[in-house]
Image (cartoon, rainbow, N blue to C red; front, side, top):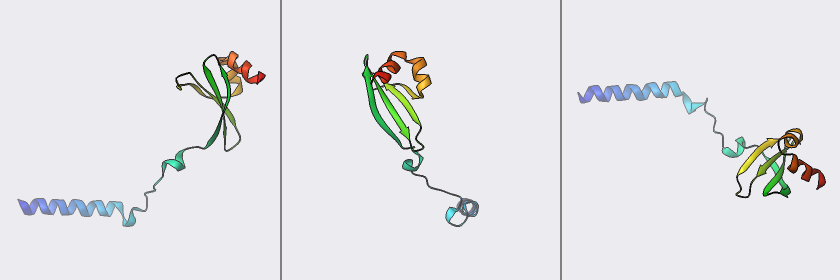
Length: 97
């Protein structure tokens, strides 16, 4: 019985090595830093207990996000039109700043 289990274990190890290939060439390690998009974030306006942040990504696109007093994100990834439509008071404060 021990020989059967040892043989079965050896065969499964060899099969795994054959499938993986030398050096696991199909495997690519990606760090979280490579996956994260870099955006420059600036606090622009504070109004009615909300903070409006302007984010500029590497391509130069501008987006906005809003946080409440507790630091929770209320909205994110808004462009100017969406900001004006969904949060008119905040948009007006942005124009006045």
